Image (cartoon, rainbow over all chains, first blue to last red; front, side, top):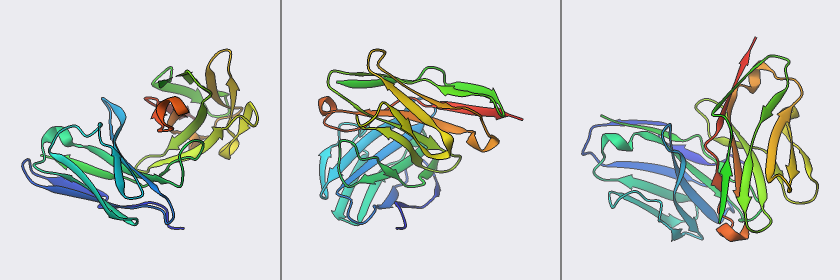
Length: 114
Length: 114
């Protein structure tokens, strides 16, 4: 099991540019989560999917953020246009069920917007 | 509704000393509780979880946690700290009151001095 795979590991971009973060969940996991981690806010849930369908996107900060899951093995988080305050580490996590099953996290994408 | 409070954003101990990281939760229904560890430049990894089978839960790397309903606590302990334990530790809660979506604490950074 390769675990949750995120790419790229690091992304540096200029303000106003489009940024796309990618995630491959663990095979067989029906739930996929996108989190953002910053020193100020800690770990924030942005959106989560169940069977490729977005269930709750109330954590998405603005319309500049969008997420898709076209199939069970791939999800993207897009920021367009990016701003310096979007600089953070973005994590993807998956699990096969809710309740007492833990989340499996990827190693994150560190985004820097200059 | 559910919430988690981790007391102390930083805890500093000497190598070989007792480690105690505090976590208090709030949940109107029986919760499931988790501790995760995050090493630098990595995602969160499960350390241990409480699922009501036993109040004292043993995890990886010699860590354990005790569920105390009367105190609404789930503190993490380790008898003897090792340099390799230096990391960020997160407590998380899920429950039916939160649709089993994990709520994470702000995290506690464990610093281990030689």
